[in-house]
Amino acid sequence: MAKTQLQGGGVQHENGRGLRGTTESLAEPESPSLGSQTELNGSANNAERPTDKYGFIGGAQQFSEDSAEETPPEVLRQREVKWLEMLNSWDKWMSKKHKKVKLRCQKGIPPSLRGRVWLYLCGGKVKKEQNKDRFQDLDRHPGDPKWVDVIEKDLHRQFPFHEMFVARGGHGQQDLFRVLKAYTLYRPEEGYCQAQAPIAAVLLMHMPAEEAFWSLVQICEKYLPGYYSTGLEAIQLDGQILFALLKRVSSVAHRHLKKHKIDPMLYMTEWFMCVFSRTLPWASVLRVWDMFFCEGVKIIFRVGLVLLKCMLGSQEKLKACQGQYETMELLRAIEPRYMQEAFLIREIMELPVSERDIEKEHLTQLRLWKESRGELHCKSPPRMHGARAIMVAEPPSKQDLRQKPTITVDVLPNSKNTEEERDKKKKKGKKNTTLPPETANQHSSSQDDLLPGQPQPLLKDTPLQGSNQSLSSAEHDTYL
Image (cartoon, rainbow, N blue to C red; front, side, top):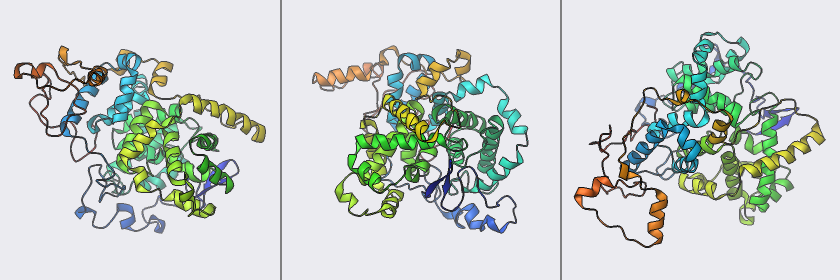
């Protein structure tokens, strides 16, 4: 994590490069500042190095078998069927069964459907349908030379060891340029901020350019309004909110940071602006994003609070942090066990920080800001706390939510065995019994808890019948 310091109203990296642009020239192919071919295209022997299931060459994004949970194929398949059913009746699920959608996002969205679900959760699907051909119009425009130059300089820095972005001028970098350039034309008053590049890159790993563009628009306008505007006032406010909430979560960590006068912007800027995509192991990044798209910015606050509590939350840990420098070094090297998928997700879900807590603290910090610095220069729209808030604020039509092509999943009438019913049965102490062969297929219970070796009932008349394979590839996380 690059060290930052406040300079005027904005944020500056210690190397002199602000988050809103770069100073070195990387646009010309012959420029010596381009770096070596190895720097641009990753290691010289990338062709021989294995690619992990997320697309990173040599597992470059901190991937290890210990950092990720493996979901049995039959469980993954059952989850895919559930998500396809939800997508076909999205408005009803969001309005009447939002808690179930939230629970399934917390369990993790199936890789094969992740991009499509993200698009629906953030409202990007509706935006796309309501603005037909808008992206194509922006894509044809040459763009503002000022922003085009800065974007071109940043392309090769975004996940250079991922197979999509490893080649200079490859399809991944081309789509990344198209999405970021289109955003500068869509919001010319905001332009481009460096932290938008990794956000757009993650989206492109899961969906086509047009869908990634509208998802980026929703993140910038609904989830994190003002984060990427000149002056970065919104992220500074959220830094103070994070620090105030830390006092409740871990008074030891709060006291230590206050004692050494470590401004939140020094450690949380990249965390929040990049939604932890440059911090966590990839398995954890995807789970955090699943929950972030559903529940909103509170998930980012919870992740930050968990990491601070784990790294600075006891006197024993603070023995090695006798000053600002040592503390910052510790926060730049978070212990892997605290970022491991199962541990981190459990801690996030158990942390009692709600939207109301964040909004209450936001009002307090906004009042303090006005007393000490005056009015905000950037008037951002209100923040939307997750998918349901976005849908309530901008109700979509059925036409906007229609899938193309439409996917139909036929579910047997008797297969609606809800988790609540199973919980009641467990409380009554009923033991599982083996169903007779003739009724086995009539009671398709949820298989989230099945063991890998157990056979699963097949659904009649579905495209999945007769296949023991998941919709998602066992090797690659990609969009359909």
